[in-house]
Image 1: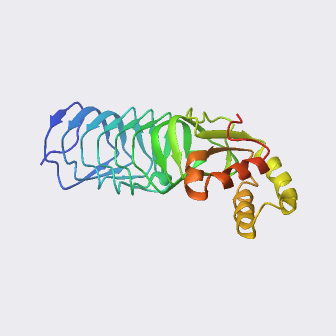
Image 2: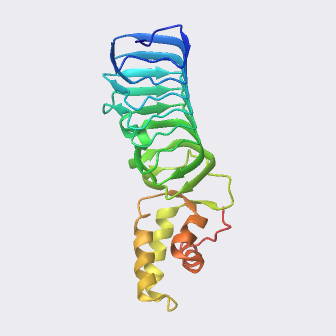
Length: 255
């Protein structure tokens, strides 16, 4: 059975079922159409590796492993395990990979690119996403900070469906270019004003008022926010969304 090693290029190979790599540096390797099985990286350095159409579902990263300038393309990364704060990915590219179940929240990503990847329903720490670029559709992802934590990310070519921002400063983000997305500043001040006036709106039903108040309160600690107006309309209806932004003091066309 083959093991990962530096300087190799293999296609459709079978790797050892469980292979432990400890304090190793593996570089300049290309793996194509292969099941890498269950590698365990313990305090390893991976540099300029390419995984193209590979199965890495049982890979594990521990003890300060570093992954630099690596490319993961059309690969299965589901359930890849990462020890909490025990792996740093720098200048890596993830393209058309299935990352559902991968413990992304435990790793740090610096100057990385995620293009058309699937990693639904994850909570990512803003402090661990540094100058990263996302493209394609993000679904039910939460970016979470400590209240004033800057999120440095490029969402220009993204669709954000059900994406939430909690305790993040979005001033350094590039919002999606799509017309269905709206970047709003001074959100906390807008919310405060809206909550003060909401009881005076005679057009609101009790049901809509409760939903509106609940939606606004979720934004009380945010200075900026990125909304997907189309996604909101699909859930709440166009009339509610129009009213929501009216109470925030902006329209869906506001930039």
